[in-house]
Length: 439
Image (tube, rainbow, N blue to C red; front, side):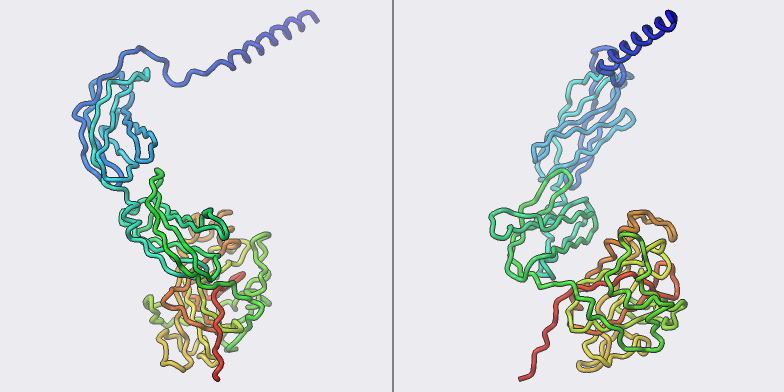
């Protein structure tokens, strides 16, 4: 027993010692060797300039004690910047400036003991940030539910286009849109506002916090509503249009029973497999020749609308981004109930006014909308959420805004390049078209 007590006592002392030593601040990195500063860089010069910054170059000293090079400078926002480069580099990018003005930077070498050399100063001449070019290219216009903002970003710089508007009945501002982009041709849609005059402020910001002035103008949003699918009906009952396959009826597109929560897909629309309405004849669409692989179907919205956008929700379960879910597709519309059937005449050229011809409304390719980018058959939880919950959203081009009641959907290519179509929901937004009565 005495032996066991001695062991327990020693263990207690060891644990206490370990706890005390653990409380001491841990030394990070190499222990200092000496206080001798390293030799500074030489031949410090500006090599090139670009939007928001410059590239500098220098010669390294012959000093084995040197660990890295650091440059320090201040941005237009007042933010203190520090850029480091290893001993294997003889250049670095100095970035984050907003305006094209002379700047002074300090460059030091740092030893393994974290001792810095004397600073070497250099006056640099950066070009202005790309945000100013983007700002000058801004185009704004009325759109459904708000405004549409277009811009050009020739430098493909990572930027944010910020849209704000006054809070109704208040002097405060609210953010209406924040569009992050590095695309050359960018676009953002602000929605959710009433059809009444409203001020919108648009600014451009970069990742260092530089912000342009505001482009301010008044716009009148166009009324937009989600179209009530309770009025949707099968229509143009062409025997070649397979509105159902083993109970997977087209009405499944309109029941608002999605696969977002549990992944169920029993309420989806599924054409016959293979789809007898498909055609392998090239079609001269406005976007070029195409083959309707998956087929076509038509339906009646119940009343005329000018369509603003649509959303396709994929069949759920294990099916998102594969099999019959549409990837490339086109939509046509008509105001007349005797428009040609889906397979009679697929040419997109409109007939003369007053005739029963399909009117081309838009073509979309969702190839880049799979978040993971994984190959066919491989999906992630993010992919499922995008396909089942968020949907594949696309806008009808402004140049094709026209009232229609009857819809034709052409599946140009499914994700699995298959001869069929299946979807869980198909949702449209737009503005009701009021037909004026003849007096």
